[in-house]
Amino acid sequence: MKILVFTEGTILIDGAWAGLPREEMIRRSRLGQGLGNFGSSVPAGQAAAKLQGWLRQGAEIHYLTSRTKPDEVEAIRQVLRRHTFPEGRIWYRLAGERYADVAACVTPDVLIEDDCESIGGEAEMTYPHLRADLKARIVSIVVTEFGGIDHLPDDVQSLVSSG
Image (cartoon, rainbow, N blue to C red):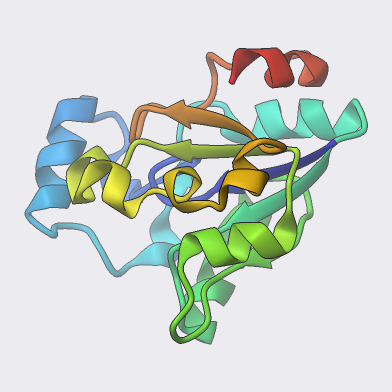
């Protein structure tokens, strides 16, 4: 099973926001506060442990980042390593690409992303913009922005039925 999980807002939060209520994180994001220091990101809840558990069950983990500059992508890679996320390819958009274009290239079995509440909702998400044939084969799991993935099933096979 190939899992593509979005990084910022889904499994990572700004390190300065750790411990804040989700509503405050949404407010700060809408104001553009905290954006830009990607190297200070921390896991949302126990996201690293959840993904490690799925990896142990045979899942192939891939990441999708909103970052597009090589140094920012590298900062996300370092954050994932520092916080013991499973090794996995980090995908990002090239000039003119949309998230849906990247997801189409990856063709995961499961796509996990947040609802992008603070930045425009569905218009900023990946799954809603996929071609119909891809929507038919990719399970979409949408979590609340900054809410993490702790509540998702520990059993990786159960992800397919939870989407």
